[in-house]
Length: 314
Image (cartoon, rainbow, N blue to C red; front, side, top):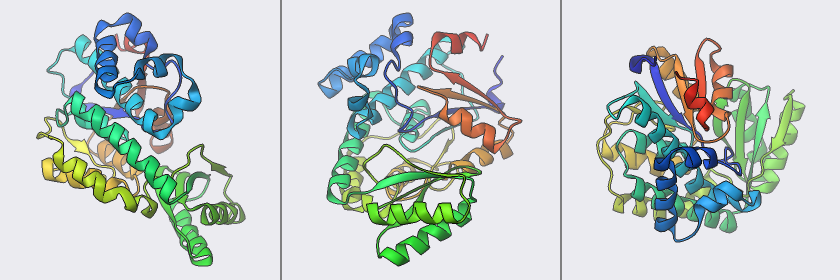
């Protein structure tokens, strides 16, 4: 039986999308099908078909992956509440990058229909930023985050470009983002400094970097026009690794998140320090559960992406 005081709900971000996401749950739970149908209506195209059938290349596009992950995460969360009761409140919710929007919906701070439109707009703006200021991202494995931050500064000084830490995912896994030339330089420096691997990620944008600044003002306008509510559950913010204190803090966080790093290691450690030892991951794949094992092996992660996952909770 889940203990709300020691449980957190966590929601993945871009990279966790996969063809078939949500399909089994939609076939099993009418409320999941309803969520995907509502998303199709809100967006004006068959997001559900894209999630269930693909193709993977189209699903992976930023403008599609973000609403797909949002809807799949919300739908899976609703299945859990259907089983446990609407009054179940975990100690915390948190989401990685795009997943933060899903977490806000789980905390009662963002309505589903508003959230669908918001994440779709976020994806559009991030795509536009990638066209205006081309860049990319890479995962650096086996180096401390401080070393990676230093090599980013070194690479940027050499090229005159942009390279920053985008995600501090877990000990030994840091994601960097920047323009093409500086990213390549940073990957080479990482190898020189003893990184186990420097892996180029299959994205055409430099998320969580200054290259997103060109669309930040537009996104802040969208946030200002989007209704938010006081969360009923503490939401750990990506940029601060601390609970977001009210609606103004939520809007500020989501605006800053475009150009600021995701402090996921610190976010999880903040929850661990407050006694949270069980982490339920909603949506697709097991990315956050894998990171959890690297942050603290004593913590327990459960992936809730299909009926079997929910059955495992008893």
